[in-house]
Amino acid sequence: MATTDTAAALGTLSTRRRFSNGGMTVLVYLAFLIAVIPLVWLTVTVITRGIDRFMVDANGEANFNLDFLQQSMRGVFGGMPEGGILHAIWGTLLITIAATVISVPIGLLTSIYLVEYGKGWLKKAVTFFVDVMTGIPSIVAGLFAYAVFALIIGPGTKTGMVGAVALSVLMIPVVVRSSEEMLRLVPNELREASYALGVPKWLTILKVVLRTAIAGITTGVTLAIARVIGETAPLLIAVGVADSMNFNLFDGRMMSLPVYIVSEWRKGVQPCNDPGIPCVGEITEYRAWAAALVLILIVMALNLIARLISRYFSPKTGR
Image (cartoon, rainbow, N blue to C red; front, side, top):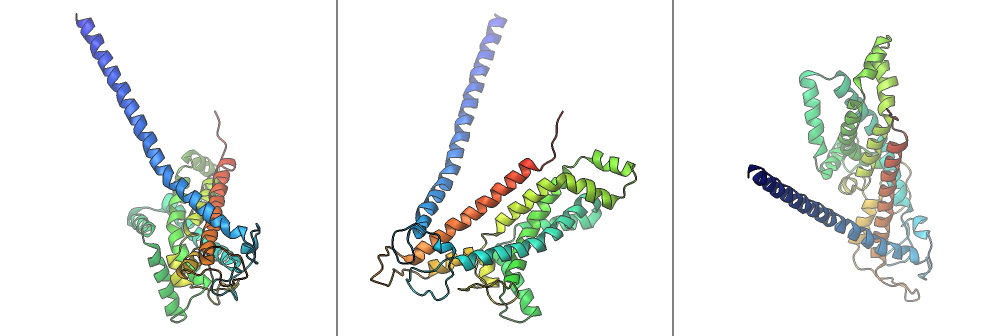
């Protein structure tokens, strides 16, 4: 009788576990669908609306071309069908590269200190401030960079370097956190083996630790770049708006893709103003969506590069 009761209880417990497992599986798939729907919707919307600008040439005729990527907005007014984002692409690349040059050495050296040298209250203080910097709004970074250069150079200073400093404030904590995690993953046995051979600590970090973690560090840096390349608020404050090419980070305003999108959208309804050109719709809206499409493609490319670096350059392990 006891055996029968035990078997019945086990059968009830097994049924309950299968039911719970099935219910949780359904919830997981449902959460996945809820998360994917907005992503797919956003991607499809940007592609369908952004591709329209590439389907109209300078004469307003339906013809696929890449003129939008080869022209700036210099001399383009109102609803003229000409104009492109070449100056914004160059501005985005130059400002982001400058921000990377500033952020990577500072972030990497900070992470090395936290993992290899840090101890006591100073390590706790650095960790605390890095956590605080991770959560600050991007517009605060723009205000900070603008205020610093206003004190050093003068009020109203808006250049590409000011924008690079603003983006570096946002990049540094991301680089610190990602590099710190990668350095902690390096086995202590490698460090101890190097010390046993008489190699000093600084050379061990340079030749052993960093070489082992270089793939993860590079991936973290690439993701940090993808994180800040689409920032708008700090660049609006620190760099401003321009309609022509500017390759000098230290002189004059520069355009970036996020700011270009905002500036075109703020122009409002401006249909093509030449009755002889068969242009359909609002040309400013076309430009904004096309620039958004290019920006998303750049971010996707950066994420793909990060994945490839992580896959092909990480240390190979085996049994």
